[in-house]
Amino acid sequence: GDQRGLELAKQIYPRIEAITEVALSFNDRCDGKDSRDSCSLGEELKRLGQLLHERFELEDCLIEVLHNAHQEKAAAAL
Image 1: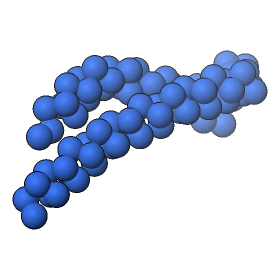
Image 2: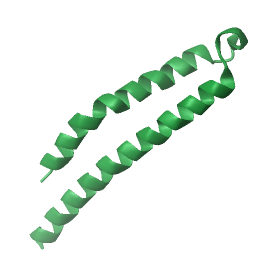
Image 3: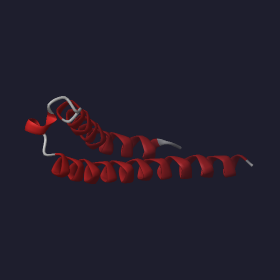
């Protein structure tokens, strides 16, 4: 019953992975060690916030699909 969830995961995982890479890169650039020269903190935080918002929406969508699939399977078993 998870086929839809697995298909969705295959579609959105590359985007989640890309957002993770941006977050890790942000951390590397803006870790507080002489970051004033290489990091425009305000712009970086704005971009990171937008990307994390997108990631959370993607994750929520995947969780909902998987939850519904398991809920339907549990209801059918009763």
